[in-house]
Amino acid sequence: MIQYIQDISIIFISIILEAFPFIMLGVIISAIIQEYVSDDFIPKVMPKNPILGALVGVVMGCLIPVCDCAVIPVARRLIKKGIPLNVGVTFMLASPIINPIVIIATIYSFGATIPSMVIYRSLLGMAIAIVIGLIISMTTKKNEIFLNEKVTFRKKHIHTHSCSCECGQVDNNELSQTNKNRIGNRLIRIIEHSKDEFFEITKYLIIGCLIASCAQVLIPREVLISINGNGIIPVVILMLFAYLISLCSTSDSFVAKTFTSHFSNNSILAFLLLGPMIDIKNTIVLLGNYNKKFVIKLISLIFIFIFIVSLIVSI
Image 1: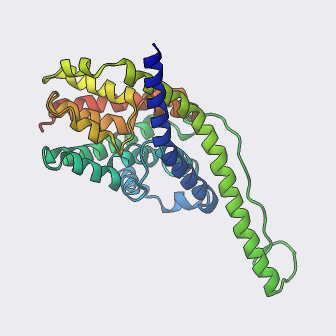
Image 2 (image 1 turned 90 degrees about the horizontal axis):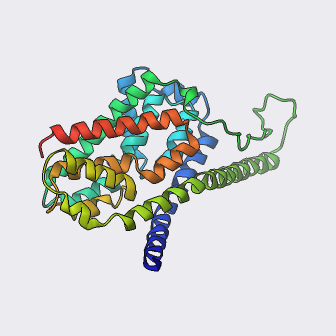
Image 3 (image 1 turned 135 degrees about the vertical axis):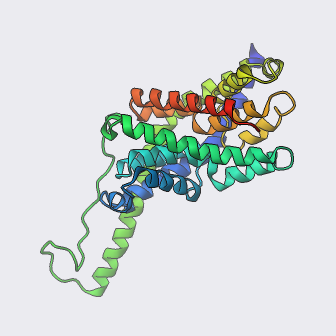
């Protein structure tokens, strides 16, 4: 029993330490978006066509290199800033699979043995993300996906020459000081917002990491390896395993590589597709920030599409 507790503790700490830097990156990006992107900017620049919008979500996933741990706060902030729901969901699901760091890790793991795995993971990941994003946007209203939450801060008014209020003229020294104050105020607001969102997300992340660490210790690897071969069962087993162990998308390909002599390529593909899109720790985080009905719908669609795709493709 003591050995189990020790093993769970070690894995729990390792998952937390692995996730924290990415969560911090995510909340900082979220705070910068909150501070510098106006509420009316994104709706103006986003394509009206939902397909083109989904492709924008894919491009954003390539340009904003965040893993599955960090993408949730970034996607939430973008949706609140006016990005279409299908774009936000596509970005949230695609980014952990197609960002450059994950692609490089997948190439390193499978480039020499199963090079097609890199292509299938990237292309199918994008396709599934786009389809799920479109389905979610057609069946869900944006104002129904979030939990009620308070506004953490408001921007303060800064007087400048272009100010519409009657504050009079200011000299160059005063204007310079005003600019410094504006930069300082923005930096303070970014720090405050990052802090608030970090602690808000972390409390759910800790619960998810604890469950994931218990799953890693209590589910023997030998049991998985004994269920090898082709067909439906190995696909289901590795999908569930990916969901439970909650590996970061930057490292899951190294674990998947160890399965190549025991599992079919299709089941390994399912593992590589599902883990970055959803796992147990991210489910807890989602439930802490989104409406339960939306989270259940999102997870169900992810499992259904990955299961179908993993059975019909030939690697």
